[in-house]
Length: 102
Image 1 (cartoon, rainbow, N blue to C red):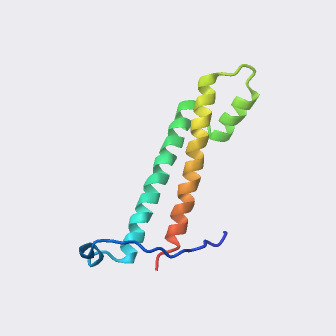
Image 2: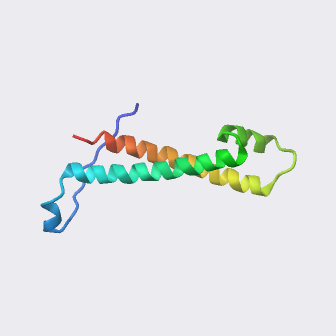
Image 3: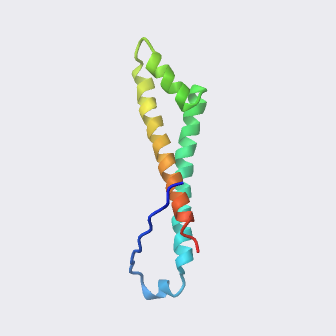
């Protein structure tokens, strides 16, 4: 696995929030957001798999080999591909954030 490059950031928060929230809790909140986003894209991919009764790679092959183009299939292909990319991106962000835990 590729090593994650970490950068330090500075955020401004109200003093009463700073007193009640630790760095670990902020990272946990970011992890929760990343996990939520990843789960959203996974669920959308699962919906497409159920709709077409196949995995993305099989659907792509079906689209590529079709003699007659069906625009609704192409629309779903583009959406599904976006869901796959979003899923991969948020999975990666989750793993990177998880490595920031102390």
